[in-house]
Image (cartoon, rainbow, N blue to C red; front, side, top):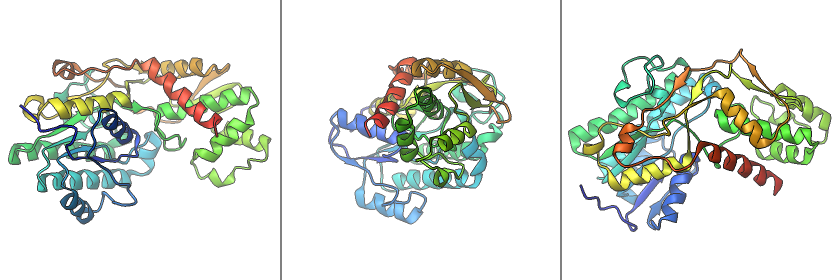
Length: 360
């Protein structure tokens, strides 16, 4: 099938300031696409059906990347259940329906490996979706994402649209969020090891820059006395960050697959350019096809940070599902595989994080 997707095509990137959206937008610009549409959430609330439809009617995008979503780690999903299901349902329903209404030629939607059933054979094949219950720690998010991919499927079947859903694993990248309360695993421990290393070197300027630039969460951001090093160190200890150890949530035993967000952006552009729904089917797993234990990932980042201390785990926090490994054979058959080695991606993220703070 031939697509009318070229450098001058009008392309809308929803969620362009987020981790995924910014990577997609940067890649489109790098590759010479020059008719790009994007608006901030302050300008357009994607949860508002009328506003979204009015925007689509005005802009008439030909191609759409959906990278907008409410995301977070286990604690955020557990704490904000209502927001996770309402916001994500609203965003997906409004964008996908408006895309159909104005005749968008093709749309790339995102699911996530976390929406597969919690107790299922590994690695996760596309056909395993909806064969069991999702993990309770992210059930609201999973239900919303399942609804979005089914909406794409049913619009394709009923109306002949070309809306594809890609299923990535956990993501990481340089535009991630580092709020310790709501962050995903990798950005949270990148920050913890960077601060722990600074403590070992008595580099309180680095720590103060971090506390000024990155939210802590837990209601503590307005309680930090940046003029009192002892108070700062006491607060960090409560967060599991000390000179002698870094404490992480859970047992460290679950296995996780991670993908550099630049690779996901590359996959999204590849499938937009090359593969139609008729060839791809309902969804496509995107990932490395390899996973690591939480402890192994923490150990890698400890070595990258050169932190000379222990890694401890607080098992009072839930682990989530034990393993989430994607079977990526379908994506490979369709011509795509990742380019960035996991270890190289971790090192790049860590260096980006500390360089940004050191230059402030």
